[in-house]
Length: 120
Image 1 (cartoon, rainbow, N blue to C red):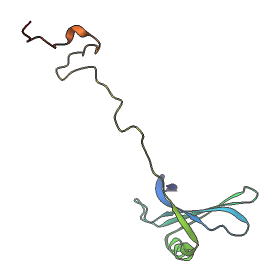
Image 2: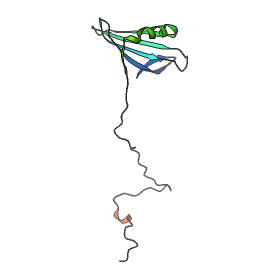
Image 3: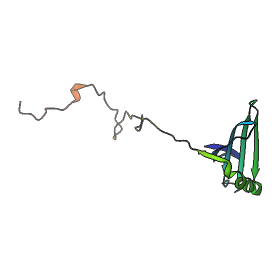
Image 4: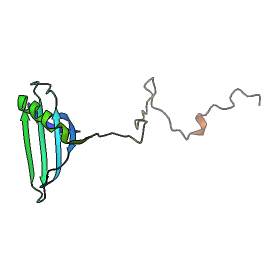
């Protein structure tokens, strides 16, 4: 997921990989369908050539919509980012019970109440 700076903030965009032209190594396109603040369509094309020079082209409003229809056949695939978490549980442990008293140590065997109501 890419970002475009629009209206004083970074906006999340859809990122696409394009087929590179003859003198470019990498071409990526960031597409913001509608800015939540100004409600404009924004497209930013980022390219890297063989000498590692970075060029960016940015279109807004009507020019962006025309450029989007023109560039759609050159799109190879959409970049998708997945956030996988290995640990599903939380790391927070409260040292106080529901009455506000501090909990005791787990390894204290004298607090265990096993066998209190036994016959012996």
